[in-house]
Length: 169
Length: 108
Image 1 (cartoon, chains in turn yellow, blue):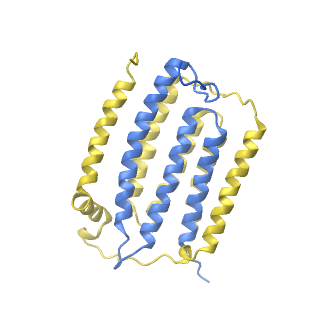
Image 2 (cartoon, one colour):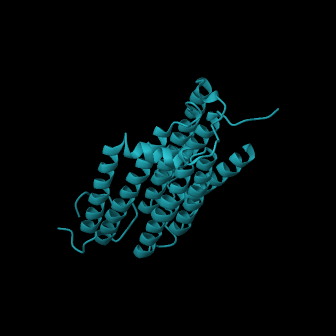
Image 3 (cartoon, chains in turn blue, green):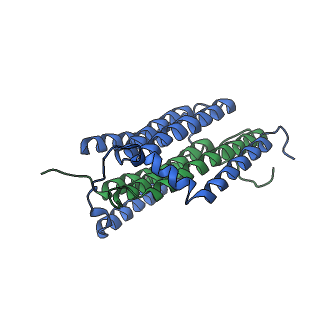
């Protein structure tokens, strides 16, 4: 259990570092897919099966295919010229290191994170699966947000069609 | 001694993933890679939500309200990526570059 956690966390982190480090955008995109797969494994380890599958289907599937499609459509130069501005890199690294240090300090100080992973009921039955419960919540308590999300998707689709026309007037 | 996972482990991984994404946004110059790093930061926040949902159990079940919120976040981010990439294609058509250091005027 704990070994698998470290394995998947390492996969997600290695993928994330690859996104930043690779110079070729296509390599960055595939590295991001690996990072998303590691994250999905972490979700499934947290018993969020539906969210883990959605992460793979939506992020690693649909969104990354869209990214790769656009990268290849635009025919980006493989090697982006690094006019190496050391000051920017050093300042960014310092800023991010400070952020991580702050995070570690806060996590150490507060007792919220100390609790162990609690047991959950693992009894079978069709109405105890997480997809059943999330679906029930979505279509009872959250009926209004899900209608709004439907409208949002429609608006986004129309907006993308308008934006991709040849002349933007 | 049997070591078990605590909430801190997940929060720390999530924070480090967020920081790596932030670093990418700050130092990369290609606008599409910056957009990918934004997605990475969003996913790192998702891990926090799932972790809190799992550790906040009531009568033997995770707190599913957090996972419902995550469902909405994933939907909205899919729409956001579609619109953002369309904007980038339009930008590339008018400027012929994806380098953010060359995109420095509001009107072309």
